[in-house]
Image (cartoon, rainbow, N blue to C red; front, side, top):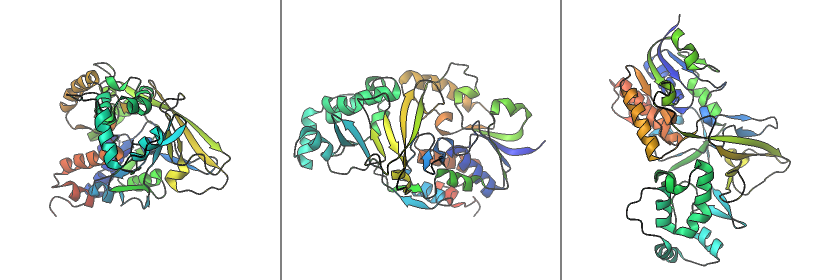
Amino acid sequence: MQHYDFAIVGAGYAGSVLAERLASQSGKKVLVLDKRPHIGGNAYDYYNEDGILIHLYGPHIFHTNSADVFSYLSNFTEWRPYEHRVLASVEGQLLPIPINLDTVNKLYGKNFTSEELADYFKTVGEPVENIKTSEDVVVSQVGRDLYEKFFKNYTKKQWGVYPSELDKSVTSRIPTRTNQDDRYFSDEFQAMPLHGFTKMFEQMVDHPNITLMLSTDFKDVKDSLSYDQLIYTGPVDEYFDHCYGKLPYRSLHFEHKTLNEEWHQPVAVVNYPNDHAYTRITEYKHLTGQEHPTKTSITFEYPQAEGDPYYPVPMPENAELYRKYKQLADQQDNVHFVGRLGTYRYYNMDQVVAQALTLYKKLVGADSLADVAAGKTPNE
C-alpha cells in the first residue's frame, strides 16, 4: 500500500495550496481526494459546448489586499486586470451596487454632491446603538428606503432569512460610498487568471509528489489509506458524522444558457433584489475577456436550502453549534481543518489561500507568510 505524508480532502483552494507547498517546498508525498470529478472546487471553470469559458458554480472574481497571496498565486498564472462592477435592477433602472453617489442620484432624480450625499445619509440613517444584525448595518448607514429596495429581499432570497436575522458580517462586506466609485471591490489587487481558474489549479497540483483521486468520497476509502497527517477541507460536521446535528449551509442552483447575441448586459453581474426567483445573472465574457461575436453565455443563480454546501449561515445559534465541532476538531491528533467548510467561515478566495499558507507556515515552522509564499524554508 502506498504511504503518504499527508492526505488532503478537497481539491479547492485550501487543499490545492497546501498540497502544492507540502510537495514542492517540503518534499512531502501528498494524496489529494475530492468527491467531484475535477479540481478547483467551486472556482472550477471550463469551456462549454459553445466554446465559451464559464464558471460552473457561479462567478468567481479574484481580489485581495495581500501582496503575499497575490505573489504566491502568480507562480501559477498570468493575470488579466479586471475590476468588477455590479448593477442592481431596481424600479426599472440598472443602478450601481454597492450604493454610491450615482445610485442615489439616479434612483431619486437628485443631483447631490458627495458632501450633500453624506449629509443625506446622516438624515435618513436610523441610529442603532449596538449593531448586531445585517439590517442594523444598512439602516444605520443609508436608511430604511434604500435598505428595502436593495438589501431586504435580496438577502431573503440569498440566505432564506431576512437581514434582521443574520449576523452583521454579511452586509458589512458591502461598502457604502459617497463618491462615484462603482467598483464592487476596492482591493489593491484585482485580476482574473488569464487562462482561467482551472488552468491555475492544474499548475498548482502538477507535481510528482502529488497524487490526485477525483470522484472519490473520503468516507468510502479512509480505512484503506495510509498517511501520517490529514488536512480536511470538507464540512467539519460531516467529518464528525453530524454528531451534534447538521451545520446549516446555503446552497445554489445554476441555470446556464448560451444566447445568440454578442452581449446580454452591460456588466458581468446584474442583481435582482426584488423581482424573479433568481438573485443575479452573470455574463462571463465580461469576466474572462473572451471575444465571441455571435454568442454569449449567462448563468441564473437560484439560492436554495438543500444541495452542495456553499455558504455557512452566520447566525448566533449556528456559531454556537460550530463551537462544539471546533472543540472536537481541536482534540484531533494530526488532523487539520481548513477552508470555508472546514472552519465554517464565509471566506473569500484570497482569505482561504492566506489561511492555507498560514497552516503551512505552522506545519513547517516558517517565520512569516511572505517566506511561505516565496518558498523560503525556516533555515534559509
